[in-house]
Amino acid sequence: MALAGGMLIGLSVTIMLLALGRVTGVSGITYKLIIRDKGDWVWRGFFVVGLVLGGVTLRFFYADSLINSVDHGLGRIALAGLLVGFGTVLGNGCTSGHGVCGISRFSLRSITATLTFICFGIATVAIVDAFLGGVVY
Amino acid sequence: MKHSLVALIVGFLFALGLGISGMTQPQKVIGFLDLFGDWNPALAFVMIGAIGVHSVLFRFITKRESPVLVDQFHLPTKSDLTPSLLVGAALFGIGWGIGGFCPGPAITSLPSGNLESAVFVGAMMLGKGLFRICKPLLDKYLP
Image (cartoon, rainbow over all chains, first blue to last red; front, side, top):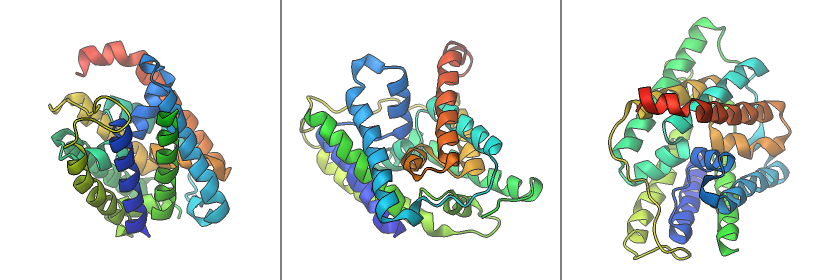
């Protein structure tokens, strides 16, 4: 399932490149939506609507895919969201823009960024495990 | 019109891919990052599948003069490793490890009705707004 889902992700970012010549980077697309970049926000808005419609479809046909059994408390979730929002804009990308599109282009920046966020993710989970009572899942 | 439809379809398929692959389940993401604990390597295959498909097709597409619906490709041109790239990726990694969500899966999870995804996306947009406010300072001190 992970491989099949990954291939579908690869296919969808390929359609974006073929049709609109764009990198499918979710963090950049959402950031440029809020700053209304160059009036070119319509396709970005539709992309986000597509994401949400995909989520609605998952909810109806594969509800298990949206289970969130990480019991963190909303404070920790909010902190995570702030760091992800700020960090992805500062670092020019997230898992989609750097991790999928950038690595596929063999971009040194994206390879470096991806290794960095995976390493910091691993370290964070290890620290949370060791000092903050662990993760519940 | 065509642009919007393509973007809508891409977003839709992308979200289905995230859901099918397990990226929308924070417990799986944290399991993948839990290398020194109860490691669940499954999500490595998401990257392998996505990069496997796109890295091959990318090469065919960029041989074209232009994309199908617009005049030119809009690909990133920066090539230098900057402090902001590294610091940004590190902050993102910390947030990813804490919450188990990255931007795409969090937005895709909004229709689940779980309060967690709504709080996460709200905070994420706040983080982007914070960046916007700090941008003049960051441009100066963190190139």
